[in-house]
Image (cartoon, rainbow, N blue to C red; front, side):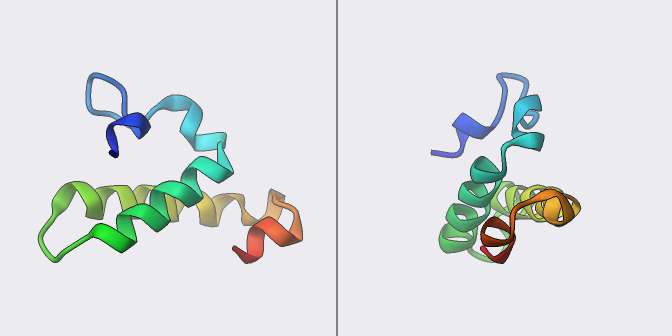
Length: 66
């Protein structure tokens, strides 16, 4: 189910960096399904968390609270 966030090469989709809803979705889904040692889901959580934190100052208040 996480393949929609990645390109065929396995890298995260370029347009995901600016897609706040997509980043939130990725983070929530990965955090709900992750078990210790699942590197793919840990990578997904780290990627989305990093990019969401970087964008919080540019989001509207409602979105940044999520």
